[in-house]
Each structure stands twice: as C-alpha cells, then as structure tokens.
Image (cartoon, rainbow, N blue to C red):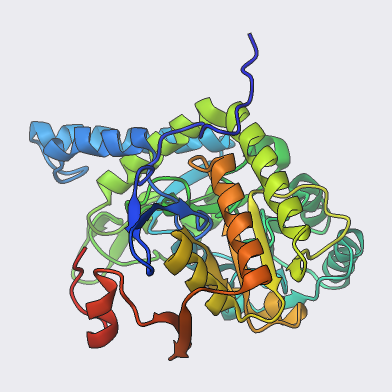
Amino acid sequence: MTAVYDPTCAPARVSGADLRVPLVQGGTGGYANFDYAASAPALEQVGARVAELLPYYASVHRGAGYASRISTQCYEAARESVRRFLRCADDQEVVFTRNTTDSLNLLAGCVPGETVVLDIEHHANYLPWDRHGRRVVPAADTLAETIDRLTAELCAKPAALLAVTGASNVTGEVLPLERLAELAHRYGARILVDAAQLAPHRRIDLCATGIDYLACSGHKLYAPFGAGVLVGRRDWLDTAPPYLAGGGAVTAVTRETAIWAAAPHRHEAGSPNVLGAAALAAACEALTELAGPAQAHEQALTHRLRTGLEDIAGVRCLRIWPDSADCVGIVAFTVDGFDAGQVAAYLSAEHAIGVRDGRFCAHPLLARFGLDAALRASIGLGSTAADIDRLLAAVHALVTRGPRWDYACAGGRWDPVPETRPGLVAATAAGAGPCTI
C-alpha cells in the first residue's frame, strides 16, 4: 500500500521538536526551525545510536580491550554505512573528517593541478583551491548557458578538477551532476561535488552519476556530532601528503623517515571521532529508509513556502537561473523596506521562528544579486505545513502592519530593544558569557 503524504506531520522525529522559547512580548511559542541548511537537528535514531555506544567509547584501532574492540568495529562499520548510502564505486575511499570545509581543504592538498569553479559556490568550495590554481567561471543568466561556459573553459585549457555544488546553499537549486561529470571527464578532468546541501535531501549514487569526489557534513545530515566525510578515488588520496601528520596515519616511523599508511587512514591522524562517525552512519541508514516519504514531504512544503512568499507584496524570492528544474528545501528572499537582519530578529523575538540572514558564506553570489544580505528559510524532516503557515503569516504581518517591538542594530546584529527574553538579557548586557538556558 502506498503511503499518503500528510503535510501536517513530520516524516521523522528530530531533537527540539517540542522546544518552546520565550517571546519578547511575554509568554512562549513553539520553536519553528527554518535553519536546517545551516545545522540540522539530530534525528531521534541518531541520538539513540550515540547513547547506545557512549558507554563503550574507547581508543580505536589499537586497543585490545573489549570496549576498544567495540569502538573500532563501530567506527569501521560506520565507514561501510556511508559507502552504501552514497553507493560508492570500488575504487572510492571514505575518509572521516570534521565537516565539508575540512573535507574540501583535505582534497585541495591532493589535486595535482588547477581547479575550475563557478562564482556561485559556498566559500568552502571556493577558497581552498588556490594552492594549485583556481579558475573561476562566472555563472550566466541561464543554467544552459552556464554549462556552455564551463564547457568552453575546460576545452580551452586542461584542468585537474571541476568543483561544483550539488545544491546551492542560498537558493536550493540543484545542478545536473551526471551531465557535469560527463563534461569533466570528456576534457580529462575529475569532478568534486560539494554535497553539503544535497545529501540531506536527495539520494546520491556515485557509481551511476560518475562523481569522482564528494564531501558532506554530519551536522547537515541530522548528525550534529562533529563528523563529515570526503569520499573519493583512491589514487589521489594515496599519493598526496597526509592531511595531518600524526599517529594512525603511519605504518612505521624511524628517526629519519615515516612510512605513511594508505587512504583512508593516511588522512585520519589522531584519535578518531568515533561517536561522530557512528552518528553519521545512523543518519545515513535512517535517510535511506525515509527517502521516498522525505522527498515528497520536502517538495510539497517547498512549493507551499515559495508560492506563499511570492504572494506577499514586497517579498522577492531569489533564483540563480530561471531554467533550473529542481530545488531542495531552501528559499532565499528579501522584504522591501526592511533590513534582512531586522526581519530575522523580528521573526525570532515576536514569533519564535528561526531563519538565517546574511550572505550565507556565498559573498560572490549575493553580489550577483546586488544584495548585501538576504533571508533564508530552509526546511527538513521535522518541518510541517503548520510551520510554513506560521512563517508566511508572520512575514505578511510585518509587511502589512510592521513589527510590534523596537529593534536596533549594533555591531552588525539586530536585537529587540529592550531585550526581555530570559538568557538573552544577560548576554546582551555582558557580551559573550556563559550559557544560561
């Protein structure tokens, strides 16, 4: 029997689902989280896996004790869970890192030549490639023309790597990865996909698409325990210098030399993040089971969010290309007459709604839009239609009658004046102090 999509229910249970936060005007409100694209809450299954493993936490790979053997087994099993989740090829290794940024900086030390990127990238996939040469291709007004520009660049001069986002962290637009992989290979390059925003929303098949390297973060995959992954072809990883020099990355050391291990251990020096890896594996397993319902849920809510915002006078939704056919659950927008930070502060203080404001670590892309800042609402497995409707109602109220509280900007951040919410009053007065929730 086919499950019927119910927009009133979230397809999975996440931490903080019942969180209530104080309102500046008094009372509390159920927290509506629209910042999944920055850091997603933990899935219930992820928290359970960590709690189960925590009593057994011990040294990995070199301990003879029972707890060490269990921790080692769980760590290496987590690597296999990631392999299955991403459908890796036989010659691709899974290297555990801290996050996507860490993964891309690791790979930057392995690339034996220049890297081609678009100017729409998150800084994590824009800045690391300088060490061997970064060639920036300006995105065109359409996706089709943008691909033509990438083709011309790769044809004109050889490159080692084409590095692209899987889905824009600003607009959610998904790039045609199989087509781009074929393009890179045609001109002798490999392809890297920054899947930080794509992996939480879409199943990715590295074998089928021909992707050579992929990076993603646990904290965006409902596993916020400090682990990420770089998945990629073994040869570059095996011939590059170790990302970090230290224990675990070597097979032998003398006073004069070191014999470095093969990947993945070559790039995992130090004590591994066992709990983070186990959490990431649990998230991969849960997302595999939820793939169908989760995508239907996301598509319905994204359509509801985007069309609802576009129906409000003075609200502009951002898109890079009019011909991009697919988007994940991310919508960036502006509100005429209001600074993005002021809108975000208003939504938080008066409506218990959390959105992102700023330039989203994608300054060149925001400059293309002619903006210093924008707002971003992103949804996930814990989002419901009621959350969408609350956000739309709050934005509509702002446009039609304005905020009910005063707000001021200091140091680039907007805050309600006066700040009355417990825990934030002292922090505002004293600066960054101890957490007092």
